[in-house]
Length: 553
Ligand code: UDP
Image 1: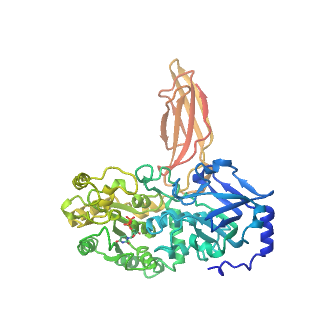
Image 2: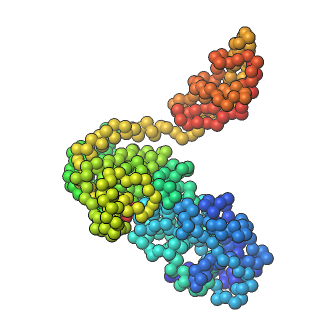
Image 3: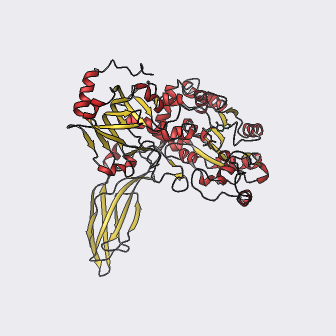
């Protein structure tokens, strides 16, 4: 390992002198520990103490300078999971003068991104918590390029998906346990610490029952750009794309239809579909398509991705493997199966992913409601859903329950018991749900023309008023189109006008197709009205309101 981080590119004495003279410099973004990412010059790591070290000198910088608030509770989250108390980052402080008495530091010349992986054994966690956040953190800081070095500090070994982490940069990522190979003191010439949480869409239920994040900031576009970049690194090309120029349009349509297929993502150790063959036959017959099965136990990740990236439908039991739906082509359908007593509405990481705006996936869930079709495993270890260790009464309560009550992550025995059941899928009810669900599938053509360009403000808003009688008045509001509209083809342009009588706390909203309107209903003489106007494209793309108008009748 150690020869990989070569010392050739930096002059050792220059670096050492810089560290001794200038110490460590830190400049961060983010107001809170939960949204902070810090950039360091000469952040050091002492493998003996397993601590990062900040060296103070006359020219060191520490921004934010939090004093002891740095420990309340931490400087920042080292994983993308919000405020998890096992994922905090902090450093120890020393005067640079102490370097004289310390082991000679080894310098890491690469620009380094330091982070914690949250749960590298689980594919959902790998993508949602680590790969996407790391990918977009690297996009945020341009010196975290293809040559960047990633350092994983959570302390786990490589794990089953390490090849995926390798795709993020051309350099081998380092694990915490490998850092001691660099000697007792290593110093990162330039490093970033922390991960962007901008792309995460799900909270796992540490403080409230699991569910979509309150304020999702990512759209399908960013997820798909990431998926495309990863596929490129895995040398996967979409076959559909390659075939584009072959034959006439009609032929192409025929061929495409013939080439369409369904993927069943199967699990071979836990949470099984007991009648997978029957399910596959039913799917093939219902949709007149080929059905291909994949599993993490049978195929390499790139070959699974290749298959999924051309599929029309992905069918799977609830589970981490469903995160691979981010590789599905637009317009595909995700079908998620839930074991007995598990409510699909309460476990929605994959539904949320499929439903992100612009992801353009259609999501359908099916739930086993027949208790005779479930196979439980009460005698397994607790982490695989066993309940033998519980008191008799608790066991009986769990066995009698037909719906898991809301619960927190991660060791709720009833949840584990139910989620690790195997299921005999009732084919008629499955097909019924599927057929019903496909009725509401939007056509891709329609979604494609929905642009995501928002209107600008309406320009030159004006009002004119006139008093008719002692209790009748008129209010005419007019405006010009938003500046960007003249460059756009928009299917439907409408305007929204809000009218509020000054001092009242309610307002009347109006939707109008034209650029002016005379209001006379509910308009009183000798009254001041506040009027807001905004433009709306295609029913739901809202523009900003123009400055409020004060209109006195
Ligand atoms: N897994 C799998 N086949 C199985 C069981 C699990 O490939 O039969 C994978 C699963 O996709 C995940 C990891 O092993 O990446 C851990 O599975 P677990 O059931 O613990 O988590 P879940 O899928 O419920 O998130």
